[in-house]
Image (tube, rainbow over all chains, first blue to last red; front, top):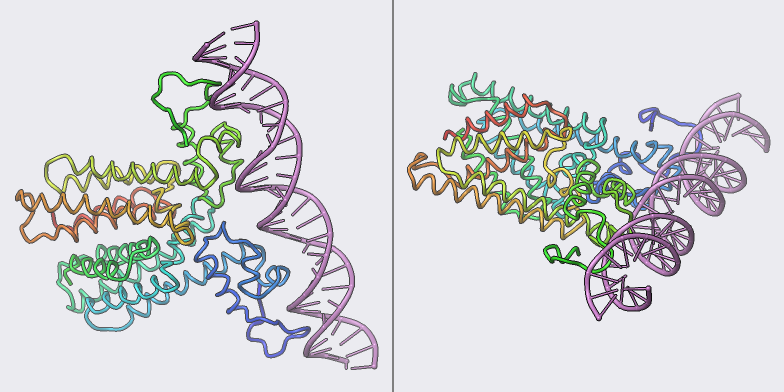
Length: 203
Length: 203
DNA sequence: CTCATTTTGTACCATTTCGCAAACAATCCT
DNA sequence: AGGATTGTTTGCGAAATGGTACAAAATGAG
């Protein structure tokens, strides 16, 4: 919806808001209240925009949510890709991923992961959301699996390690940490989970 | 709200519905659409009751949801307690738990676990829901941990097995299976996840 | 039979919600 | 300067939503 981002000069009245910033603020409301419980008034208040501007920028309510969801899915995959791109022992990498995840999930009052905390509910009745969630998680799994596979090939892990099982355990642990955060558990609980999951990985 | 369940004879006009059955039907609507997206009209249509009867039976909309949520939390803990109460090798027990979970999560079009799929979103802004979810999952973890601890003591598992870590892995795997189901993954995907988690447990 | 009691059915109300139309404002182009 | 273009503001309106009042109906008690 929002276009001509990079173009030097646009004609007509300039926008009074930054689309990326507005989408982040809208996303934060969805993040706490969920999609269905968030009203356009909530979004207008959070972004400082009024409804017609919201419509012009992102389309209807579902359009705003889908834009936020896609951005969040992209950020998630990018974060995993970044964490796995650095070399070094897989154990260090996994520990880093867990630490970063815990920080992220506890920020904002323990809201957890956006996908887990909001999109999953909507996935029950919305085919598009369901697909976005499925593909986002699948991408993360694939990235992690490739990384573990490479680590085995590089001799950084035991030869009989199971890259696919380990990738899925990292993924599941992240999701579990997200749930625990949103259920109100404090940091030490999350840290112990991460530590015990790491123990079971025997890296 | 609903009372005098066991009393032989009630005065006045008899109820035209079965409270337990009505609550199950209401729960099924919440299960697919989530709490916020479910309207009282939806609930009235699903239960066959009209709004005043719903109010008399369960209170307001949140009351209906909380009743369904509490019942579901109870059922979950009961299912775990039942599965762990039977003796035998822990590996068999875990496999059974996963199999049962997969069946349950894929039924109804892949709606996953009620708590994971609906309550977690609401937990973001509802303190009571957050507490119910937290306690329900905590109970399951505790039951599983005790069972693994007993298995170690009984020599059914390696002495250096980690009951707490294993319990948390079973729990996290169940939650992950629930998410995968709701994200639209087919049965084989879930079955592979369960199998690989079991592999990592080295039971 | 009559009355008290409980539930049901209909209708209603106040509020919220989404979405849009039309007028106003700011900028660019010629 | 004047028109074209784009974004903002205000306000409206139709529909849906949560919740309730009240009369009718169905049962047990006396």
